[in-house]
Amino acid sequence: MIIFHILISSMFMLIAITLTTRSITGWRKNKQYTEFDKYLAIGFLVMLYLTLINGLIMYFYIDPALKASLDMHAAVKRASLRFWVVEHFYFMTFALILAQIGGIFIRKATSDRSRFAYTSFYYGIATFITIVSLTFYVLYR
Image (cartoon, rainbow, N blue to C red; front, side, top):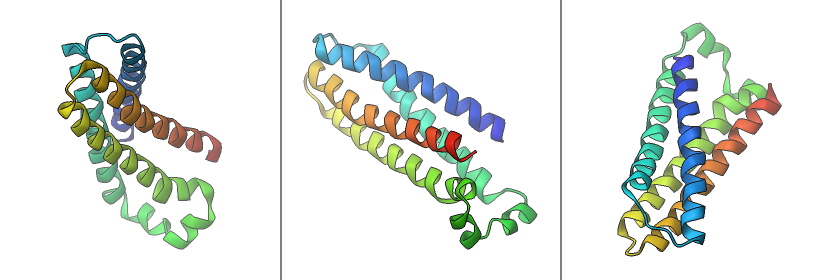
């Protein structure tokens, strides 16, 4: 399950970085919002949802002996456990909610420039939150 989670997260990061750079470029250079941009945005959300579902499955269905050792009070005191039990989940959930709100604004936008602007803002911040979460993972290891 963890390997699947890492693969989905890696694909998400590739899509996220591609989408963010394309949207910033499209917004600044007033380019046309193409079908490829639309599919990148859909892929962005799909990958976020897949990682959420996979993460929830891993969180609730891990080995019961291991889960018993993940006492919430002990997890809050140890940074590496706190990251997995608390911080990573909230970071990713906030990024997903922000991206979903952004998706609504993007679909309702009337001009290509505003679509790129919404994509840059909402998906860019969601990408930034994901990168911050990954940075915490590296620091806590």
